[in-house]
Structures are given as structure tokens and as C-alpha cells.
Image (cartoon, rainbow, N blue to C red; front, top):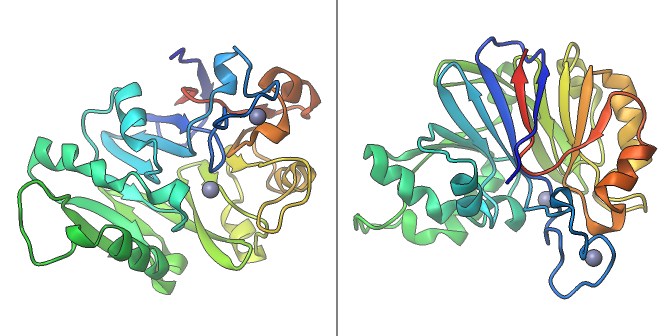
Length: 272
Ligand SMILES: [Zn+2]
Ligand SMILES: [Zn+2]
């Protein structure tokens, strides 16, 4: 994988963000699809399911563990992971959690996971064997920390790093965005309340989902994303959670306003 490094002010001197996946729920290419995006040979048009890896002051955090989690950890060379933050319970964001076993085995510790009540219920349903009576060594070890109303208001501390919670709506379900320093990650969104906009004042680098141009019941259209970006006014914005309907990376890049870029798998943003 080709890593392209961009330098921006992220708020912490020792901070690095890697886009592990920038595709929508089916990924790109879509199985069996023969469209020009799915057949593209540009590596930037090959998108695993959306996730980011945040390294700050020696603390390693991943947001979401979709179906490609294992591949993403291997591809980015992640050797230690301190915590997982979950945005929401949809399968493209949680399905790969079983593979935390590798990290459990590295340090002998349960994985610290931050999840809303709804995400917790989904994890306990989908990965019931990890929460049962059996303490078999081969099972994933997961320790859930609640993201409730209190945490939404005052934020959380992950390995000593302050994380601001950015609740947004995705159709009828609530999704958590996260702000670390001057970096914010918001995916799967079609409504941002004013209280969350207020928490994004001063964000310099934004990664936000933009599924496609056509209306969707639970995602912003590209135009809606661009007006949200205008309101937040970061120095740089990278689009993620892209579907094949949005077109090829190189074509979309030409249509975006200044300061807004198409994200792609393997893109690294480092503090300047
Ligand atoms: Zn999604
Ligand atoms: Zn396609």
C-alpha cells in the first residue's frame, strides 16, 4: 500500500492519523460490479470499510472494527492497540471485533472498548461468546466502557488523552463522532445538532463521510457535506465512507472546493 503523508496542525506534537479504510458498507470494488470505479486500477479507488487509526503521545486508538479490521491492522503494521472507540453498531463498523484476540495475546490484557448502550447491546449479541461464562484462552477479551449522556457532555479520557464526543444522527440512530486535539472524525451522518457543531469549533482537520451525490435516508449527500464543512471551516477536510457511486478518486478530486480532499486508504496525516 502506498502511504501518502500530509502534514497539518493536529493539536498534539506527537500525533498521527491513518485512514485505514475509506469505503462504504460494501467496500470498493463492490463484489461483481463492473462499473468504472470498481474496475479502476488506481489504488485510491480500492476502499476497505471505514476506520481510522489515531496515534497520540504513544497511545494507539482505532475507531471502529469493521469486517476489514484484521487486514487493516496488518496493512498499517499496528503492533499495539490501547483502545477501540465505536461510532455505531452497524456491521460495517463492528464486524471485525473478534480479531482483537491478537492484541489480547500481545499484552495479556482485555481490550478497552468505548461504546454507547446500543453498541454494547449489539456487541453482546454478535459476539456473545466473548461475554459468556467461558474463560477459554482463545476467546476475545473485551472490557466495555460506557458512552452515556454524561460522557457525551464531559468527554472521556483514553490512556490519558482527552477525547471529545460528537454525537450526530444517522437516520434514526445516534452515531458518535470523536475529536482528539484539533482533529475530528465523523462518519455515517445526516444530521449534526448545534451542540455538536459547537464542540467542533477550532477543528483544523476533519474526516467526514460522504457516501454519494444522490439523496440517501441516513447519509448526507456530497453537497450537504460541503455545506457542513463550510460551517465547521477546518483547514483541511478528507472525505471517507465513499461508495462506488461517487465516482473515481481522480474525477471527484477535481470537483471539490479548496481545502476538501478525497480520502483514500493508507493516507497518513501527521502533525506538522
Ligand atoms: Zn457505515
Ligand atoms: Zn461499482
